[in-house]
Length: 208
Image 1 (spheres, rainbow, N blue to C red):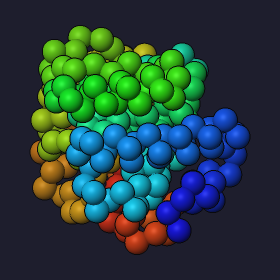
Image 2: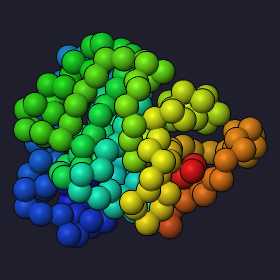
Image 3: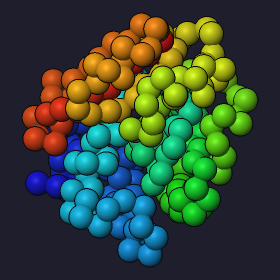
């Protein structure tokens, strides 16, 4: 099963409006992806599982509070930022990517979905000077590099149950990568929440 019903199975408290937004997002994204290759065409039949569910797994670690600010770096096709923006409509999301054509598509999708809590920016994250409660990403670069680029962007005062910091979606063996980082890292296995095979080796790293 790779349909919006899969989302509802894992997130039964989604509102009717959110379900409609996820349905529309899927249709819009598939249309754009047929014109501009945002993700592999082979992934399109598994869009809900590999992109929506994967992105929303971050909400299993933290519920972003109203008024908080989240930066999605190297957002690519808008993941995890756009699904999280649908999940948390009162949180402000800034999605950045250095590839202009991808940000143009992300910006258009956010506009067509009327996501007023999304700002899409064509920039390198090193040039972003704003502060955020959390920074999210999906396998953009090695962890030590991501932290070096973004340590200036984390707000010092935390208002969530977990400390402000980095929430990074990654997969596979992360021992070497995490050994290079001196900060505290908590690793969450997505297989704790999702039993689909795709999630067997997937992790979220919370670095604070």
